[in-house]
Amino acid sequence: MVGEGVDASWIGRRVWVFTGLSGGYAEQAVAAVEDVLPLPDGLTGADPVTLGGSAGRPLRSAPGHFAPGETVLVRGAAGSIGITAVQLVVRGGAGEVAVTTSSAERGARLRDLGATHVLDRSGGGSPDAHEVLPRTP
Image 1 (cartoon, rainbow, N blue to C red):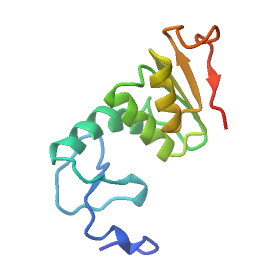
Image 2 (spheres, one colour):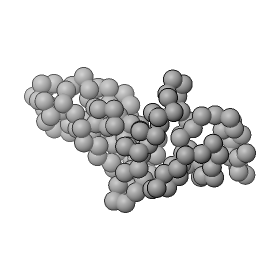
Image 3 (tube, rainbow, N blue to C red):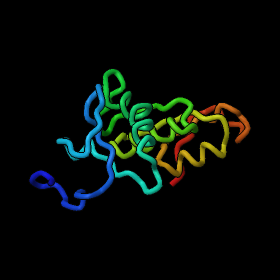
Image 4 (spheres, helix red, strand yellow):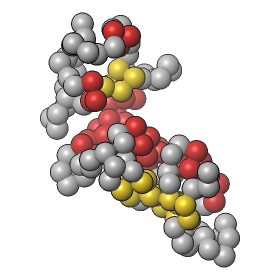
């Protein structure tokens, strides 16, 4: 069942839902559509719990909460938790997503995922690698 004005295509899909800071496990729950993320095929039942707890919870709770349009910094973004955080803040409507990473290759991957600014701490990508470089269109 979905609420008024919510796309019925959510019915029957595997999803991860932000249920609050204490978490929860259920086959059915009441949640705002903004708190529902579709799960890609191939994830085990434990995967979304791990991802949601590690990356999702800090992004939804003070002081980590952000509002759409705000700038978000994800430090050490090239790891699995950082990548998930980047994807969540992009999906959540962040205006700018700044990331730090340790290589130009990882920075390029993060740009592909929606990062708007990349700080390559390795210094190996270019003479300007330590500067925050905007994503190229």
